[in-house]
Image 1 (cartoon, rainbow, N blue to C red):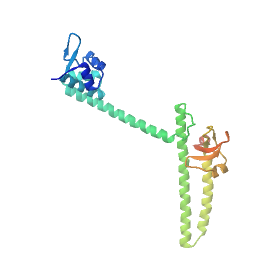
Image 2 (cartoon, helix red, strand yellow; image 1 turned 180 degrees about the horizontal axis):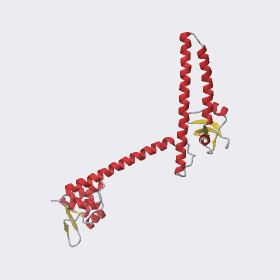
Image 3 (cartoon, rainbow, N blue to C red; image 1 turned 30 degrees about the vertical axis):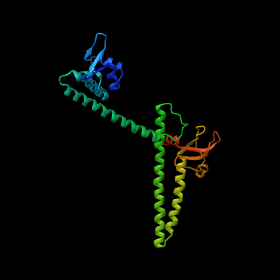
Image 4 (cartoon, rainbow, N blue to C red; image 1 turned 90 degrees about the horizontal axis):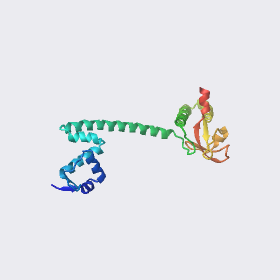
Length: 245
């Protein structure tokens, strides 16, 4: 049977000598031999016990629980119970972590795409998320109206081609134009823009907003505060919430 000094055993199991001394102090792992000069000798059995201690510790069990397992006659039964408890705790932790990840994903989706917006309290985050949800409702209404406009336009066009009757198409196009004007006014009435340079929130004129270059989340506008022209981030006009209330 092989024998190991404290340093050799520590090096073999990739732990510190101080850790071995601590396990000795806690009666968790005693050396098989202790000489008068204080030298400690460990055997293969001690090595196997230490490997089991480290395994259980890596599984998240406390040193007290590990000691109970190793010193009990019913060590297998106790180990099963403790491992079952640890398994449940880890599953709960995983479930909580998944919940936190979902919250993070939701927060990232609702945060504005602008670095200058400051967040000082949890209320600021709530306001931002509510703003993005309100803006999403505006977009959904626009999509619904747009789909209805397409149905009217295509339906009356097909009717005119097949039947040779163009009055429904003319009336349909008239309704489409009215709907387009209404949805444009509705959209710009419910949206404001944040300047990326000075962080000012403003509402541009209908003409300025209508003809401005834009993407899905921003329009190239001139800020009335700093005078710089840049892509300004679209946000929901909070005044509309007060009017609805």
